[in-house]
Image (tube, rainbow, N blue to C red; front, top):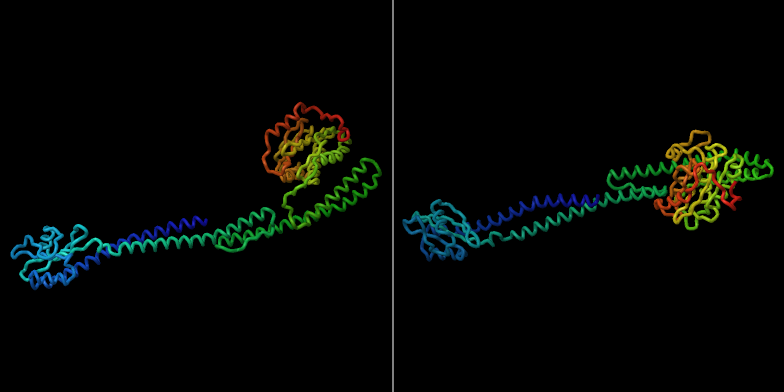
Length: 475
């Protein structure tokens, strides 16, 4: 915008300067010419009274000398009775005989071009009735005297006008651009989570209105987020009562693996609810990326969550398998986030597939990414895009449509993604791609192909076969 205003001002001012300076320069040249010939006419008029009294050569020479123009003035007096031509009695003749004769015949003054300038031919009536011609030489330097200086002054004035208009346009552009830049910076800060970002109301009326609208929008965003946090905290707090009942009932279950797992699940649920309440009450949004050393061991989390879900799988007669979790795999994801994502996916397997349906969890550690595959032998998902839509759900009781969205946001926080496809078990495969180096680079097809080829050789109808020496993690 700033340079556009400068260019427009430069073009308009240049056109105005040209439109006025060029005609004014021509007028100045004509004025200089008129001034030079007016002086010549006055010199010729100074000789005319003497010619009307006498034609004596000596007297006329003194008159011409007293006029101070003897070098540029000539007097042509015709012979008595001869009107066809005349001799140059005094001074140097520059005009042609034809021009002098034409002036005698017409009886009025005229100018003619000669070498180095022009001459003024002025007719004067003698006492004898003859017509004498006074010739006054006007050099070119006198015709153009002062024209160059006047043109230089016009050029300087025009340049000064152009520079001044450009400077004024530049200042106006700055006055318009700076509020626009502040508005852009404020929008970036608000997008980065700095909810206190505001812009000063200044500049032209349009930008002032835009600044007022932006500040109003930012205030509404802060209010909406505050309301959302309060709502989340209130809803989470309502869960404390049924959680208390569950904890009391779990305490009365006695001893045994199932009872211990139930009590552990209730305790974890209480911790999660407390975390939700504290996070919702915190007025500072978490916008910073995970620092160095943050994250968890994905293999350890996979083993822990599969140990939890294995009890339910045994009760429902499901075959399950874990692969790739025997070595540590560091990822830039919080332990609770990865655990919540695995619980969401495994919960979907138990919720949306019949009892006895097999499932598997594969962990692949690549050069710059970690892939978590959760697959089952169910009927699959007919519309993967609709399943990934936040809040869509399946329409059944207990389905909110937020499980896959939790997984997606966890993966995208590292620069990865989530895809839904068909598994080698015949059902659904959910692939979580986690960037292990924190970059937001696209997924490499070659690595995907290597993961696929690593899983070739198993048909969809084959049940997952537990690998040897892994009995502690699978049934």
